[in-house]
Length: 218
Image 1 (cartoon, rainbow, N blue to C red):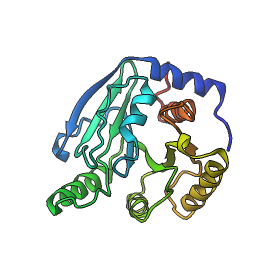
Image 2 (image 1 turned 180 degrees about the vertical axis):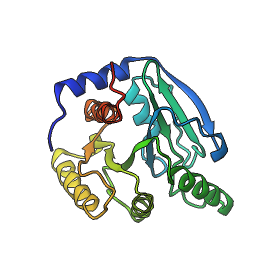
Image 3 (image 1 turned 90 degrees about the horizontal axis):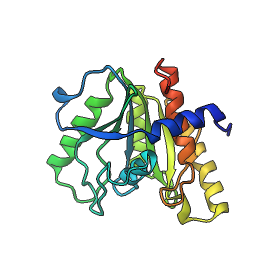
Image 4 (image 1 turned 30 degrees about the vertical axis):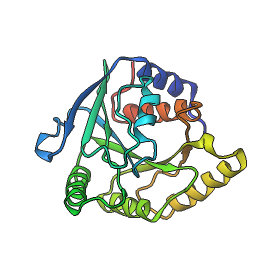
């Protein structure tokens, strides 16, 4: 894997060091914000550590709500940094057991509608628990993203929970899974919200996406 340049690392750090604010929760597509900023979304199974990773990413523990209750996030939560044309979007977790059918149907309608033709959406970071790897439900979401032609990148979370050799094997196995999907970005990042592993690289990836969309971090 090619390491990000020092310039991108620095841009990512500048972005993370800015004040971040919660903008809005969206439960209906009619209330999506105007598409005047780059959007980068975070998706993953319930309890994969999505909100915790978002908080580590921006260096603000209380930005995204965390919960031990699977399926807590049931809306699209928008966050933005001061002075950058960017929204980070915390998507509803998927795969929670025993959810009522109406909840699952509402999730499906919201997420598929959001992914379909959302021009400002530059990438979805799809979070995978490093201890468990890509599950069947993750494959279903990957197929959904492929069908929507949305670029997505697999991010391993909780990398500190397994040893170095297991993690290296998991990165390779996850990369092999990604290679089967046309919309998957061919780089897998391993991260830990506890130790900070992979966080600078993830920030750099966001800075690179902003630069590609003509919105570089100043």
